[in-house]
Image (tube, rainbow, N blue to C red):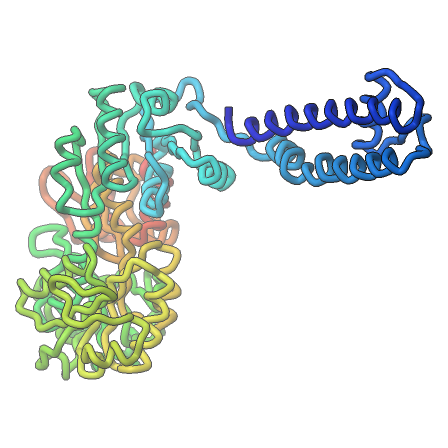
Length: 546
């Protein structure tokens, strides 16, 4: 019995008791004060009429003051008990009757699906990946309101407790292909333990918040334990460590001596202010620009008339020597020879990973956090100009915002850009939808935890897709494309249809990177595709099926 049912039962019992008590008093009063004895049933009828304001029967008016006072008190009691109780008891009943009913069990026949416990922003990225491959999924949500919100948003969800045997059986876990535990560390280990009890042969993937607790997920029986925050921290730090020198350092290897790289154009670079055509990038470096991020907006291919500025991120392919030459062109002349200092704001799991990576690369840095602790150099608020000045932001070369609050990060970017217009701002975003706002605020590079996490999960679960760019803005995948077999790349027109670029094809153990419009895809080819997450999902939807 839930809270509403208990409350209703108590109310009804109390209401009956009060009416019976008033009926007894009224019956007695009519005999004593009015000299007109009545039956108890008649007295109860008068009380009900009074409480419901439907009338007072044939007894009115009363001659004695005592009976008039009694009726007045009954009137007031009836108003309180009947009408004031409506919003508390009756209205919720109607609201529940017309509200969305969330299923509590999986639909019959559902099998080979992915069970997701529970839905987070990284889980939403995973769902997009699963949808692009046509893989069924089911979200388990123990909170009724959140389950209703997800259901109304179009997700396949049931209201059930993923930590209970009944909940996982309701999700048809024994028929599933995989279970994803995506909650807090204690809850995730509980879910894994329950899953092993329900269906020991179903693969379990657990997401860890604190990397130091990874072993407990493994002890619980998780088949794979993912630590996206650590990877996010490494990815953010790499933007600083590789930006100090002209060495490439973080390109994605596609084939032998052929790579895909994201290269941010630093403020102060000679390329700033020029269009792509004027920059002569292809002629001077020999690379192929297949896409570019302009303030968070991805263009593929970018227009030759697009103007490059500090913060533009080029997506290019080429041989290592060619990419090294382009890296020299994108680096600021001042920064190329000055190491400078990096300010790390936020010293949680992501921030700690960042500072550890900077220490290994011998990069001078200052760590700032709201609370004091090991490794924290300055205690202060990321949005406080005085605290940032104390941390040396005016002289800093770059800043990494590792704050787990997107709203504060957006505000901090505005403050930082005001204090030091030339500083390089690298930011962490919790949710993908907030990346655009951070670019508009003035960030140079933004990496979303939800994106990194979702890619990790998808790459772990999906057998037909390998994500080889987990900690980059762009997604690079290795996948088959039955829909392209027998067709040339010119006929397929992949870039125009999906916004993605095929940068390589693995055939018979070798990677072909010299791809012209006449190149024909064969059975068994593995395609290496680069684009946005949305673009690669669209590619798998349209090209990944025969």
